[in-house]
Image 1: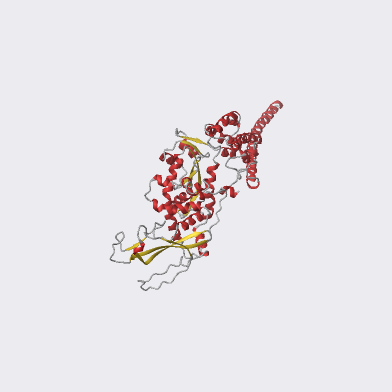
Image 2: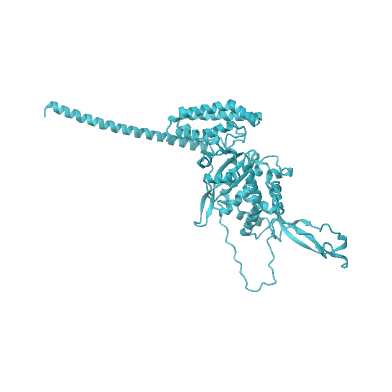
Length: 540
């Protein structure tokens, strides 16, 4: 081989090696670029989570009017799950049973005999001339009532009267007369309406499970109550209140503007003997301030909320978060017009601050401008028509600018990036979001609905789970009434005490009569039950 040939071979070899090395460098460059991007994404996520844990919570103190304090700093309060098990109950003491005839003997009830009698109601027969009668005895019925801090007995005394002169004609065809027994919440049951009210308030307003209530009862003098007995009282109470609940569900969907949300609730699966994560739905009539919860075998499918709207022929605006079930159910509906939530859109942009501060800050700044306009409308006390006009004049140009930016600049961000994910989430929901320009009643966000879910989230940390599907359905009944009382600033103790006592007389009542027992109607006749300061204000 000549020298020239050797040189050519060497050049060809080096060229080949260089090409291979270039390809390797290219591959490594792409890998480095991808890894760098991943590092940026993870760094941004870490920064976001650090803000959640250690930074100021910008949405924690948000007012219903959605003022500017929403944007003081980035961060969203995260609700953790408390899986701490309940304290184990002590084993019951076994009683020795003597096998002998008990006929003719009755074991005295020790549960309430030691409670003081603080109230007596004497019921005299009506429409009868008692001067013609002499008192020959009485019948005494005992109920147990509750005042904050004490249990007590209520004695219903019904005097019996017999004719002084047995030869005289009898009144109403009877020689012995007595006042009729009033209707009680539980037939031949001991709990008064006040006791049943306290039972459900302790469980769902103050989040105290039944076994803890039994301990508290024992400490306050009412001993011997079994959990099975308390469960029976509770179920009967829910039966009494269910007609009101069914009527309120219909009332919510008669509105033309409803907010919706859903949340998890653990429910015991009897076959697998474990708690399954099921779903609870909430719907809120915004203008009427009525709230209902419903549970359909724990399903989160969009068909659940659609079945409710179809059942009650709902037509109007339905505001919700970005959950795809709503889009699947109503995306093509002509009667139900979806309105999305600006706060959820904002939450997707917050993690992008660490990745692309310029783009994220610009978008968040525009959202801040929109809320600032809303805050000024609130401060001026504008009605729906005036608010709509102001939105068309000031908010519409801002929202159109944001849409144009997403269509021109936002499309350049990969969906693998946090910025790209935020753009995709916002753009796919922007048409629904811009519907707030159509009606001044519509809210910018779904925060009011999310606030109604929080008591259930807090409660499940105490009672941990629902025993079965029926228990979850019963929870919806009482939580709907309590949430509506909060929205109308009604003292729930006064309301429940009144309606539980009244419902036995309304078993065959017309819908128009039952309507008067719904919280927003009931308060018109009971101004004493309206609290001067709202519960949410007190909490702050």
